[in-house]
Length: 229
Image (cartoon, rainbow, N blue to C red; front, side):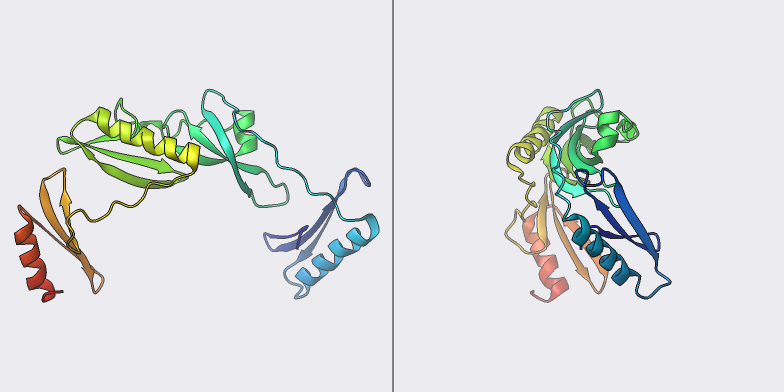
């Protein structure tokens, strides 16, 4: 129910209608009372009956706000938990070039700096590109989840894939699609970084992997190991 929340062992009824009261009303009920939730709901209902339903607070539009650490791209539609709820927005971390969700108040006030992960995130002069066995791996992090974009022969191409994925997300809300099997054989994929064919399957909780120089050897191993499946 609107105006009723649970936090740290208490059911809390709250009501705010600035036009009528000019202040917030709150009352807490301890979980030790088996009827705590019911009492909080009744309390909230009594305030509504007495003062009228409080108008919904509109969400602020922070899109376009920018400082030295972040650029706000839009609203998530979510808020922080607790009595004092704060908008959560989508931002681009200028230090890591990643998309993240952050407390809007912390962004606007400058409390959030985004510098903490700079050393661990920026591994090359090309954002989104990471050296691996003579090749360059490209990946992008969107809202805390990392997506693999492929392996490339040079850093600029890997970084280009990264920026294309970011652009697709920012402009159209598109999440990178999982990379499909590129051999047509179930459980066998071609690795561009090592130029080998890899068999990979989890059986009885154990991951079985093996790599081969050509597809025929990988298929033969698969049929031998899985009995033709």
